[in-house]
Length: 324
Ligand SMILES: O=C(O)C[C@@](O)(CF)CCOP(=O)(O)OP(=O)(O)O
Image (cartoon, rainbow, N blue to C red; front, side, top):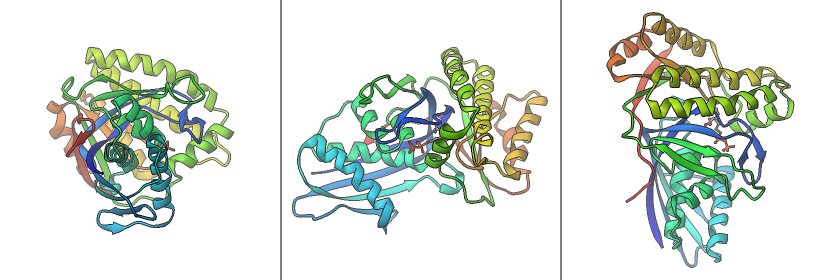
């Protein structure tokens, strides 16, 4: 009972930023991402009779404590679906440089959902797989698919209607996403804690929720029409509004550091030079820049010329789950 799966990470263009149910990981708003071809996790799960507990090797390092606990809790959901107490050896190889500020939990939990369900003998379709991955980490629900993906928030309390669907596959549009790696990043508030504090205490949260539903509709039209300026400007505005909510939280916090804002300024300067480039930022100081292939040299040169920018990692829209 063994299987291996690969999943790519994704970058939200309309942010998931708040839960209506913490234990089932149900979001307060529908959201949308693009899966990246540059970053992936391969996970092998081997269920074996006689094992007394789950074990986890990440990049050949034994993982214990809370990180192992999170995997075991997730595998409990797979065991419950299958209806049998059987433990597993899990091995993951992460091709997501954490320094790039990309959430490896999205590709990690999506690959785990696919490999564990297949290994135990469940043949889940993508909807069921997305629903399972969601219970590991919300953004993982989107990595089941390639290209442009919407996580529909759903209405049901049991979450059966909260899963991702593909809006357009990775061949739909040849855009570029550059992850700007900063040389120094400060310890950040985790996305889970950040969204919890914001939902519970920020007076700006209601405004965020109302506007993000409109942003989602607008960006979907822009993606289908391949209107890059519209897609980029909606994504950048949505990101700024998400981060504005954290400033109103109690206690207030921000994920941005000085370099973050300098990269934002560089992107806005590119636009003043007539180059369509837009930024988005998640629960950390790193910036991702959206641009078109023909502008790659100018965008890269502008970003690489900056102090404290260590590297630029470029991705195209990537593919969804695959089994090896
Ligand atoms: O990716 C996005 O939509 C926006 C964010 O990256 C933040 F900017 C949130 C990702 O949250 P995640 O790590 O999935 O949280 P979990 O469900 O508590 O595990």
